[in-house]
Amino acid sequence: MAASTAAVAPDWWDDVNNSPIWQDRTFHALAVLYGAVSFVALVQLIRIECRVPEYGWTTQKVFHFMNFIVNGVRSIVFVLRRDVQLVQPEIFQHVLIDFPGLAFFTTYALLVLFWAEIYYQARAMSTDGLRPAFYTINGVVYAIQIILWLVLWWKPVRAMVTLSKMFFAATSLFAALGFLLYGGRLFLMLQRFPVESKGRRKKLNEGGLQTLITPINQRILQMCFNAFDKEADLDVLNHPILNFFYYLLVEIVPSALVLFILRKLPPKRGITQYHPIH
Image (cartoon, rainbow, N blue to C red; front, side, top):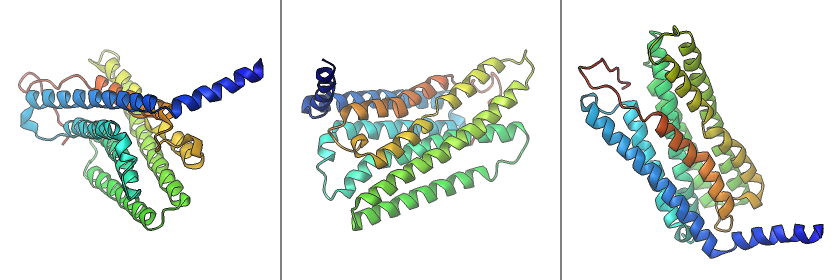
């Protein structure tokens, strides 16, 4: 009886993974979810622009714009997922699937920059070096990834695919450290404010939540596992269940929660002073 039950589970798993219907349903569901997050990010961007248009492209506005682009591209890729799998040469499949991940890294590195600028400004410290560091780090990350893609195009071997996935895990680890460093610093700094400070408890909750829900930590473990275990490969059609839960837990849910936390609009000019982060 136990042996029969054990045999049913793998059969059920294989049946779902190899079913074109389940594959299409899963990828279309992901496309809808990514599209919804992208739409919410666009709406929030428009709301902020209508509220304080005089401040131009602040870090917060760019963050929402990047969320709109990243989740929108993800949605399109999953709508066309079966066609993407047929793209030749194969290197373009890697680019189409991996590039939104790079943009996702940039989006949340931008959130770290946002926190860092708030932290340094609150402590009356210079923020002059933060943006150059942000641009430099992103430039290096993109340059290395492009080199890996070119090498993979030239010599498409499994070792290069593994190296590329491990590089993604390393960049995720770097972003996670930024989340912990500046998210933790902001949290501790707000704790030192007087208890009666207006909005203190809300800001503490927001900072703590954003640090805890960072999607990067889950991505590190999954990308490492994905790199060395072919049964956990996310870049294929016949792992729809893994794809669904990975992208749901690592990108969609955290992005939606961050957008929810940042839903409050800045005050209108003239009502109270608004200090934008440029």
